[in-house]
Image (cartoon, rainbow, N blue to C red; front, side, top):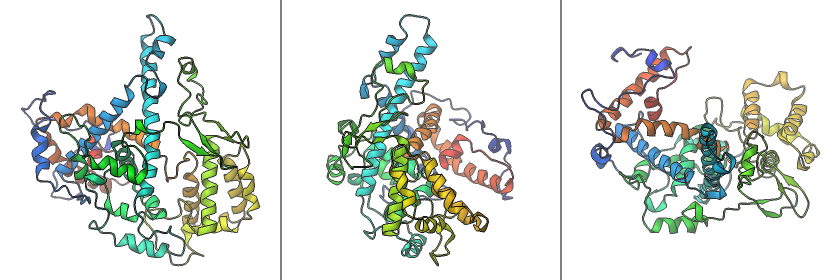
Length: 481
């Protein structure tokens, strides 16, 4: 640790339950009714609302506060969706229907919480689908997907990335709040985000980053409502074909049959009656696309689609893209340090080992994966058969690439490197904690934000000093991180 830093008790950083800093200076009491703009506005008044993010390392106090404001907007969105009775066909009266009368207070509260969580899960699933459409609508850099032959140039391009490049995200180009929320969760997984931007030729989006100041300038300081000008919703519709408000979109997403290609309308959930909520202990409860037991049957070829068969279909699609366009498989671009490794020779590139292995297989081996009822275990069996006898010769980086590639499919049927629906819901726990601490309404919020970058630096000093220990950041350090 640097000698010029004040000493910090290790317990403050090495314990997961370390208490966050006080929300006020000594002598100042927290007033929950305080005007949130009292300290907030001056801190951001002099901040440049540039569209291209120019975040410092560590972030400045006003950047931390801007991020906190965005998290509060996400919290308000979640509360609004989760508590809207009847949304997506899920009604609060299911609680009275299942637990009539008194004596079931605990059970009633638990069921009401589950109803609200289900509404939110459906909304996030819709948001992820909308984000995927918006992501693809953004201009590509080269208008061609990367291949094994062009990856070397791509690596060089990312090495030269400058914050002065990227999209010009003024407020008219911003997406809706639900799409921003998924984008934010994607950015919180930088390795996966880099992989997706690379494979899908969206390096400009990577260079842009999150236009934080432009976003928070559209969030009301008192209500935390996300408001944009009239041109923005129209521009979003023109580029994506989607409504600004996700509730105005078609609530029956369409999937194509994996066998015959027939477009089939699905339902979001089948848990729309009180009786359906009596079976929540079953793993296959519900058969909508947001439910664990999702099932879709094609009327033309009688093929059944489940979450598992969608994962296999994703693998098959990526494998065909590798064979037809030389597009590297997911998980084969970044090395163990999370960096794009310059490509010298495709035939010996360690990270491309899964790509070379898949190309060496007979196509007939994978034909069975197009049959009904296949799972990712069948994919693993085929891969194990192909690598049998070569395992001892594999280099550590090649084994890493194999594991990384397979990890893209085990619980992820989306087009991205990770399950963004699960990522958003996981992030919700942290957002709830930030809301509960309520720094935004503290009269000493400026003092609190100004000390965070220093504590962030100390945390990483402790990480370097105690590299054999697991250091868990406190909530305030996690906010800066």
